[in-house]
Length: 397
Image (cartoon, rainbow, N blue to C red; front, top):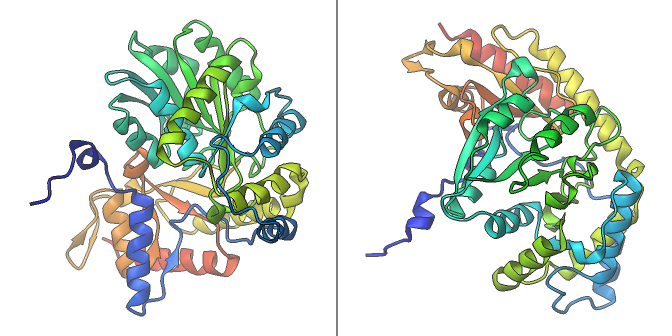
């Protein structure tokens, strides 16, 4: 009998990946499934970046890479951070990884001890919870409801801090809500952290370039806490490079060195070809993907308008990413042909089976009243999806 470790048995399967798997299974059976569950731009990587990857192959970038990334890529990341975010880092403070998810895992595993508390605003990205489990730390959730645009307040933050708190982790723009913290809101949170020098902040900024408010604001801009901020970013979302698997962190040299040490024993350096492509992405101006941003804005507005025709649906107006986090609790307790909806998971399974629409239940993100609706697909499919949703929900009594 195979005996698996307690560590792996404690982990849950990623609900977003699980929903994608079920969608694929239905498609394989011949069903026409509209997938609104995937956090992936439906655009192609820009041509200049693809060309850089092709050139890397021709130039024989086929050998092991430095654990923390090529020197010129780390230098380019520093230039990008200064150009776009007015943040100064040295190449020694940059660690390039196989995706932003690895950067986050590196940071948590290097900074949290068993028994430590990690504060996580909810709704949160699904993997934060599981990565904290891997570190054998305890996640402390702060609820941020739709009434506050899914953003926590400084008072909530301070009330959650204890003498066991070692980390705070959040995203802005946020997955799954699309909410974006303003400079003033971040400054107020930074003011709380100023009082607690033992807390490190992991700031997940992977959706930086999908920001409808304009200039992206990072909590790392506040000098009083900058040394305790681990800024995580990458090329997956903003440059439509999800499959290239390339992320990075910018952090205090001691943290960067520790994360490089861990990565050296786990995966070593990130893919050589992806790094050369990412170098081109870092040298590109943010406007390079401006057309993609505008398309996402149009889709957001379209879906919000369409959902007004669906009774019982409540949503905010997100200012970033490509998700709506929809409150569907008005449908709880209703049923159709013996199939009763008790929670958001039931809601998603009902729509998957009855309307062949795939969304992710909010329980994956810490709020079981909601579902995540990704509008990273064509306008035609978005219109069809909402029409199917309305028809299926109208059957519930």
